Length: 242
Image (tube, rainbow, N blue to C red):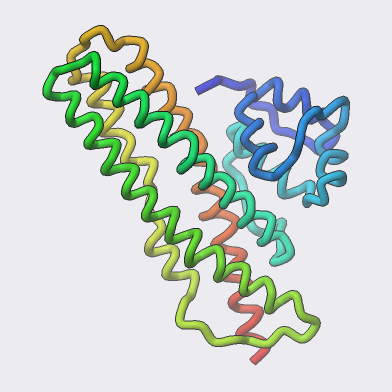
């Protein structure tokens, strides 16, 4: 993972300087639908142009920069759609880009490395990827539509509570730390798999796994510290209208 200088960001900083300090924030731009070039515009100016809550973008950017003080207190149900859209775009990044790229590199390794442990590498990753896919599908098909539905109810001037068999508390139970599953795979690559002309590919896999863990950790913080508390608050608001 690229090591940044841990700067606590502010709205007046140039967005281009923020990215140059931490290039992984290009993912932030993509997930929020912000296009380059950025010219000399500040983070706040970029947010205003893209109709985004500056505080929300700033909070996410600071998570990428190592901050660990994200809180739902700064936001309301009006921010839920932007958060859900952001998370869904990050899901596409995982399922359409980073997971297939890692799997492809592992399969290239298997053509060069014929030790029995190599079979375990692909198996570990396939098991992990299947678990993550199930987790992401649950969010895409259950959690995010539920959050959008609550938003639509609260958007009305006189919101009406619609009883649901689902509650975000179920999401808390379903929501596990999928990034921890990467440990076994990294240990296998670093400690136990004999080398056989695969050093470059092994390094690529390891780098990709660390980058993935970095982004997944931020993704989980957004869900745990911001989205889930906001949805819980929305549920309470709607129940109060009964």
